Length: 178
Image 1 (tube, rainbow, N blue to C red):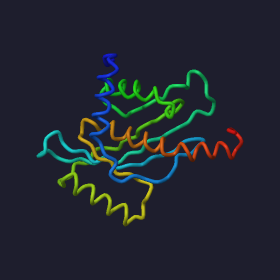
Image 2 (image 1 turned 180 degrees about the vertical axis):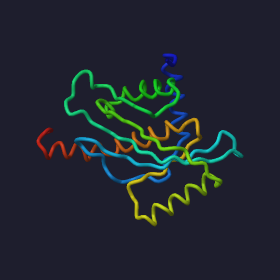
Image 3 (image 1 turned 45 degrees about the vertical axis):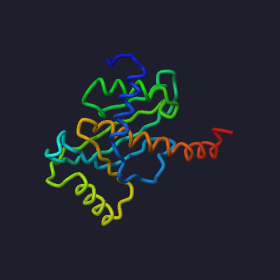
């Protein structure tokens, strides 16, 4: 478990959050009911500039509970972090945000592919590939290798927050909200 010094935890979380990038986002909202898939490519730089770049293709499944109970009030994150301290830190910070209550997020990362290109070249190639496939539902993320989980979490988090207005509107249209 991480130390309970809230200020240093928030500072550490913010530093990790700002060190990762969503290079190519998507414009689609999450489903208001049920499960949503958020596919992505994650381009990871090595710890040192001369080390290999790797690419991971993955998908985050975002599920909302069908029935909200006191036990389903905290967000669940699965397979985002290799380090338990990073997992605990993200859980601690995001559990305090109403947008994430009652959500289950599961990261399904594929195998790591080592490439000889630089981060910038890899991102450009992936962008061209997605454009050629007319694919607009797959994001491209970039991060230093130790922050891979934070990159995927940031992507999922931003999609959740950006989808909130559409989800609220749908709840109103179905009569669940005034």
